Image (cartoon, rainbow, N blue to C red; front, side, top):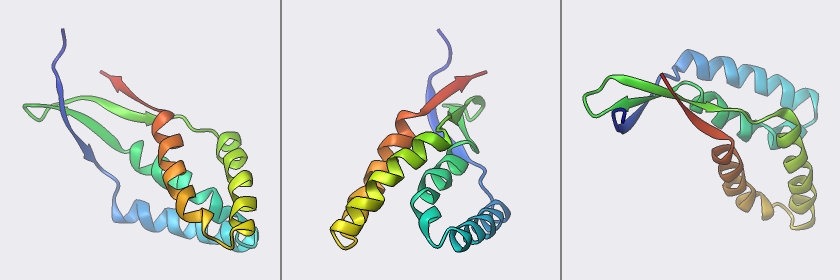
Length: 112
């Protein structure tokens, strides 16, 4: 049996964040705000994919990998765009929790 995972370490830097913000800002402007519904999926995916799994002694034993596709993100986002419009934005508060669930369900640990 291999070593037990103890914790995670994320190497998502400020530079990574700035680059992502610039790209998503442009996409949100071009799509007149519709990309804002897909953005949370890719924000979480970017952070998760820069996260390693550490053993109790601090050595890296794996990494997290999120394989969410654009189709899955857009499919879920379309439903929630309509729900948010109908509920005057209140459904967006629930949508954020749904995003976490979907992204985590698409995440796996890849051991070295």
